[in-house]
Amino acid sequence: MLEPFFRTHEYLVERVSAPVRRQLIDEINWNDRLIGILGFRGVGKTALLLQYARENFSLRERKCLYINMNNFFFQNNDLVEFAAEFLKSGGHTLLIDQVYKQTGWSHMLREIYERFPKLHVVFAGSSVMPLDKANPELDGLVKCYTLKGFSLREYLNLKVGLDLKSYNIREIQNRHERIAQEIMEQVNPLEHIRGYLHHGYYPFFLEQGNFTERLHRMMNLMIEVDILHLNQIELKYLDRLKKLFYILATGDTGAPNVSQLAVDVSTSRATVMNYIKFLTDAGLLNLIYRKGEDFPKKPARTLLSNTNLMYAVCGGKPDTQILIETFFQNALWGLYDVKAGDRSCTFLVDDDQRFRIVAEEPRRRASEVIYVRSDIETGRDQEIPLWLYGFLY
Image 1 (cartoon, rainbow, N blue to C red):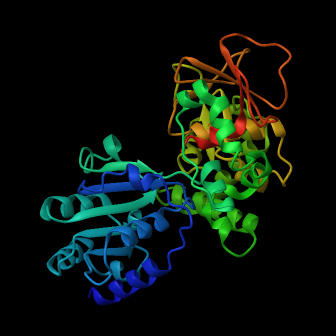
Image 2: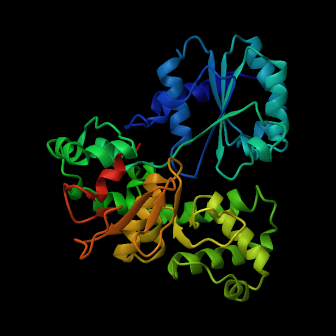
């Protein structure tokens, strides 16, 4: 039963394309028995699993095994019994990709955890998957991590062949002049940032083929599989979801007019808000709320998740101001709490840091605001180059 899977595992591990070592590999506590690696479609979860296997396990000893739940074998064979067989053969770590494709996946993971205390399980899945408190069967058992797409830092390391380090937001705020100078001695990020904004977030830009066409296919899969399948939405509502996404992606980035959107897509206001949340969970949108507010309240702003989506959906000519704001909020997403600002700032970060994102030198300055400029290589005092926030991970 295991032999075909070991052959596939060996083939994939030997050929995994991972030219950039993802920082998340070193942040995960691999000693935990049940680990979940979640992320948006296309950010490289499969490559990370295979990269971990290649770095830590000998193919000859067969203590690690990668499996994909898309394999038709699991339509008629139980995952728990498969895990038992793997453990009996001397297995130590089972890497499960696309785990949510298996009906009853959370119950099976719990059963594996309880029955086989010597087996380590690492699973990868969609960011839409319910875990922690939303999934009582796995709450308290699984240690979850989120894999983001390439940062500007990772993109530069790949393009230029460097090993540039990351910095936290406080380091950038306090030492940005020195940090920028040290980086500029090795590479000028402004010479590469346009390419990153267009195609650098998703690792599959390294593959042959038309990147934009690949991205459109992926966006459709996000809606058709990640949203419809996991939220058990009937296929007849697919067109409404896609239309809503397009309206939000190409329209005003301010607070959505939910009543008008409900008319436009022929559904209720409550359904519109649920659909917006689903699109956000799948990695297509980012919702920016006012301080002290969150879903299910209406967001103050709706932005696309990353700049690559902007180029793909907006016909290759995105608005410059929205583009640089999208880059900034995407760089901070998942690491810091980003809220909508007021008249003095674009974003409020972690409740006390005020950032204004600008494309040129501001005419007026407020002492409590950090000005993030897209037009400068190095900053001074309260002015920090936008590209430097691409070094947060």
